[in-house]
Length: 243
Image 1 (cartoon, helix red, strand yellow):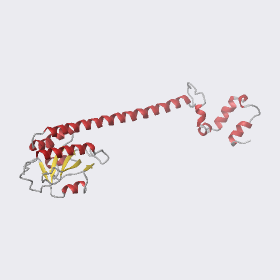
Image 2 (spheres, rainbow, N blue to C red):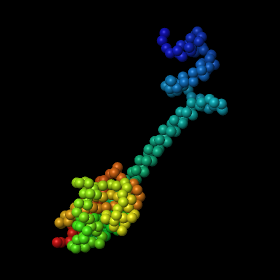
Image 3 (tube, rainbow, N blue to C red):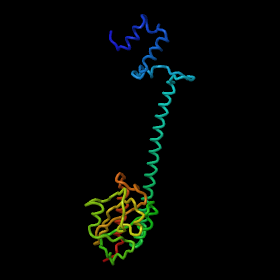
Image 4 (cartoon, rainbow, N blue to C red):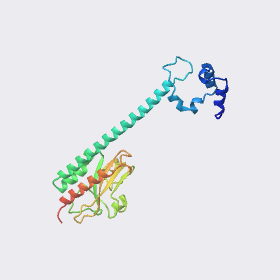
């Protein structure tokens, strides 16, 4: 006959079928071997759980099962709430981006595009600062006029984004005024996207800034930022002053 020592002890304690054993004898065995059910968790699914126990140190198996079900239900509810919250946030960001795109497309002059970027996009996108930066040198461009443009030295865009990179999402940043101008003191987190207006104008940046650290971070998707930057780029190209 094979079996563990505990099984043999219970089986050989007294001759006769197990069904004829004194329930108290079985209960005493379980008291003497408190890990019996722990070592055989599959038995819990076959046992009939008690409906209620009054006092004492007896474990209510039904309560344990219900607690497990409640915990599973709570985990599922938390996961569903997180999914709903994330979906709502994504829809809100998409809606705001579309509003910004429509404002850029509705601009009817170069000056109006600059105004939309500087003043309208922060409100529409729920950020604290937005700016257009162009590599035209510290003195700017007479043709572009542009008190609403931040002038960058040649090579600044590659320095900020990385060589041949199209965007950068910075969880934490500080600006000396080169990118965000007067709003630089507010910006703690930023998103940069490369723009190439053409017409003899060197590379530039569409920059969005937030006063909240972590508002932008590398784990975020960049599709909407890239979409907004491409629309800004094409809009600028359409209205660039001649010459």
